[in-house]
Image 1 (spheres, rainbow, N blue to C red):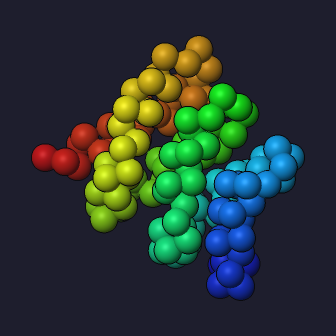
Image 2 (tube, rainbow, N blue to C red):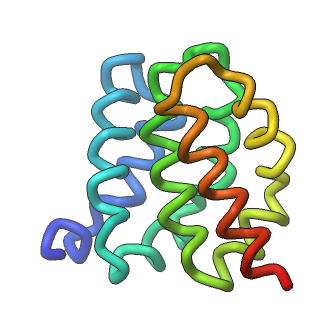
Length: 121
């Protein structure tokens, strides 16, 4: 919590967007750990994480995908954030990722879609 309050989420999001591949990986892993604390969620949203995550999930480099999907899945537990995820057009990306042969990509894609669909009624 102290790390987040110190303001680490915005620079990590920027690093995920435009860092070197190794820096992007470190940022993705760190962010995917931080998101499990619900108090961090507003920091993710205010730092513009969703458009960056969408951009990363559309890249060819799939080593970041499991970490980015974990972040999106965790944020989708919150009603306001589910709406933002839908507005950012994540659903087509999630659907395409279901075709991945990698279970670490399939599972969070399906879980996120389920959370959104279950709570969209």
